[in-house]
Length: 220
Length: 356
Image 1: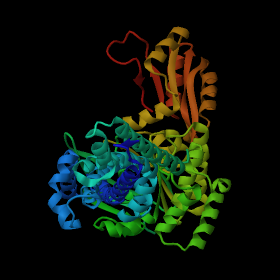
Image 2: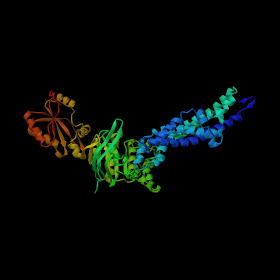
Image 3: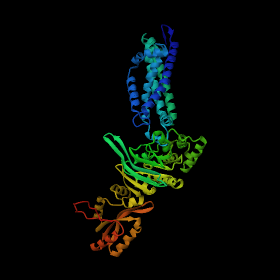
Image 4: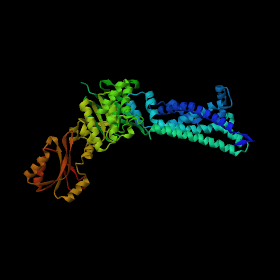
């Protein structure tokens, strides 16, 4: 795989590193924040342990507004915020805040959906034993839904890899950028398909890992 | 000594889709220490809400709830937690934590109550031995049968040595054999540990097997309550009669009466068998002979309520009408007698109540 007689493998590995850097940072920050927002959405629902209509409504509307924004538009829209946070306006660092914010809102919905599937009976049982809301969140809600949550995070990781490719298009580097600059713009399909293959392998590995962890947690 | 549970004019109103719903409506009752108290009602009668008012999972819209001398009404959520922790609760669907082992499930309320680890482990061993699941300590709920899950539920509910145990349809998800095992275990809990138990159920068999007292609920109200045998032997409310009929199948339905009449000549009467007339069946046999009439059993059922017989037998009687009339009058002095009058009486049901 080369371009004008120059091997592109070093560039590919660097792009892979950038993609992993962005994806892992976004998954870590967005995953954690999304977990918290998702739990908040769940427990503040009517009838639940911290039922609070105003908080629920604000979070719900916020998630509904941000999540559907196409990421390529979102990343340009938050550029001023990015610059204030990281001091950079392009490159890997500049992409991370936008990725993390979008990941947060995407995660929160996935988390909420998994929590809603939890049998409310176990929460009632914990309440009947005198447990308070924070204890119930930490010892019932999260552990009881951990398997599906891990699968949710795996799904999310794939989505984030997709977003990093979009970020690449506006100068964040990574595999998306690599495929566009060396493949698409130079009519070199081999390069494009190589980048695709690398992404497919990466996503597969993540999926295997997620499935394995979820299976262990659910003891199936 | 004060009652373990005392409800005074307690109501709970929920906001339903079509206006407010009075799930519990002006209920007043006392549950004495050491009792096994049944609350029976069809689904939607408000019994699950009632039991959740007793352990403060729900707060009443009005009225007063006092449990073990503590007035729960008016307490804030934070103040209710220790009260809840002091009341055991077992559920129809067991509600065990799937991510934890049997031992960890039983230990959960002890963790909430901040017991030190060593004491916790000892207590869990003790409890699992009591419910006969010592060998399952390290298993997960998914690996257990329904009956075993409910045993874990009971062990968990007893962990902090509560004086009161609430059982919400605790056997409704179990098969009859397992139901009996669980009811026997609850009986041991009451007799050996002295725990007061409130049993919520829609099955009369559960009440008649386990309970001393019963309250019958309908439309959020307690329509009848008292000693189990008395309530079931002398039901005052139609809903109570329905429960008894559904459980005993001792009284023929009109279509059964019609078939009986096809099969048997003579008059068809149903005679109640009760403990107060412990030898009622013998009396019937004696009286038949005394009045010189024929009678044979064509339908019926007798069960035990609180270890005392209850039910009814339906006879086809043959002989002179006057003798039969005399026989029935004789019996009525002892027990309730219903004569199923012949078909052709279009004015009403073919079954006429002839006073007890």
